[in-house]
Length: 365
Image (spheres, rainbow, N blue to C red):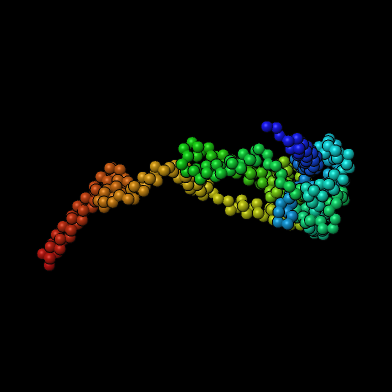
């Protein structure tokens, strides 16, 4: 049976209409895809710039949150020294540095900040180069090189070693808790390793303080070797930086230097005068060695045996025998018994002599 021609024409029209709508949909989808590519290019550019070590940055507190920020002039110098980063932007690679920064600000990848403390502290000639506390710049969110700070607003991708370290910390905590059940050799390794690291840190701090005091008294210079060794917020590279920062404060007065010189001499003399003698040091060393031996020699078997002994009933005679055995060997017990018998014989002879003496005196009277 043949179908009417009109129905076939309607089907052809419908199919052509669906094709046209699909083409329209594909054309409409291409525009947001291009926009997404642009957004991703600026996001990728920001991530690459943030991960690069050429852009100097610091960490600070802004509105009760820690942020990583950089200076405007450092961003300009970074783009001059690394022009290849503009190739990441593809179509927008011809933009100037100020325009790129303004686009990042418009996409909320950056936020302009300002220092909280805007007044000079006592004995300071200028404001801090890298302030520790920031606030959002309320006037204008545009790029500037002159004393302007910009903080990243997106979360930084964590490298692989940080991810592995996050899994390692719980294992390390569990290992520290299980230290009493380690074998004796492992306990010795852990003990001497920790003691060596602690001794190294204390020695470094002591030498650092002595060098600072000597240079401050003799030369009037404030020189701190390893200046960031006690910093709360610093990268690993900054933490072990050896060379000190430039001294920006005024030199100390000679009266204060003389005063602290006298104080240092008096402290050294008092320490030498009241230093412990050899006997005291030996007692202290023996006491500490006993404590360390108790920690190293402890084992679960000893703990379980102690619990079992506490649960068993104690016989008085056995306890007395055990205490006498623990006080001395068999030779000592025999000597004690001999002394006791000799004492008893002496008491008996003295009693007899006294009795005989009384009887003789009575007879004489």
